[in-house]
Image 1 (cartoon, rainbow, N blue to C red):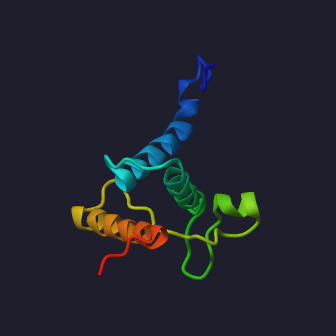
Image 2: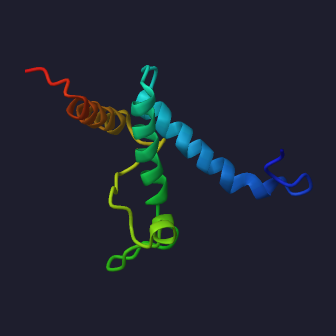
Length: 113
């Protein structure tokens, strides 16, 4: 099955960009970590929320931007995380990784005092 038309290969560009965004978020969230199926599903749901919360229109100062969540669930996503851009500095990536690790520890009860 081909995703893009053979005579119009540029049609699949938006689809490929979404896949790249998801792969990038997975690499930054998990790295080389081995996870269970439940953990993977949780991470994928969070990434889905990130992708669905991206603005589709111009973001004004007073208006809420139109997002894919508005079409899918009729409102903005309840989970509105900030996705780390692939061109962010190492400090932003490290901070996002630390936040993710703390969330996983909290959800799995692996607190160490």
